[in-house]
Length: 134
Image 1: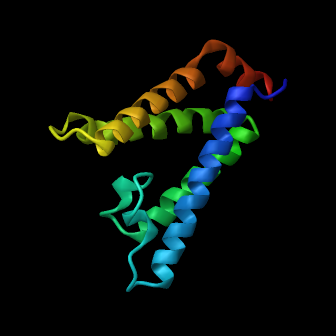
Image 2 (image 1 turned 120 degrees about the vertical axis):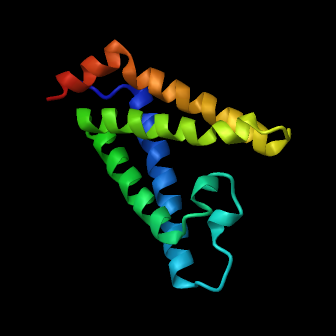
């Protein structure tokens, strides 16, 4: 069966995030005295406090999930739903903080996007597409 378009979009998006995390992790490891890229952007805001090695590890895991989604492996669909749901939980402090502004808007938009991804991957037709790909 052909890969649904939404799965392709999610796989490419996760692959892009994985590449960013890996590159920024390697850059931070290679030049420890400089400010890592992850401290500048909101994409990896949660990885700001844990260091470049965790950023690299999360990037590698995200790349594996993206590859599995692209190949229509059901383990990758389940893993993506779990990882994205964990991302929802990590964004709760940004949405529930009293300060409004860009961080609030980015956290809210990130939560909405992640809920949409979990919803899409849990739909019956998408789950059947993964089971038929075998």
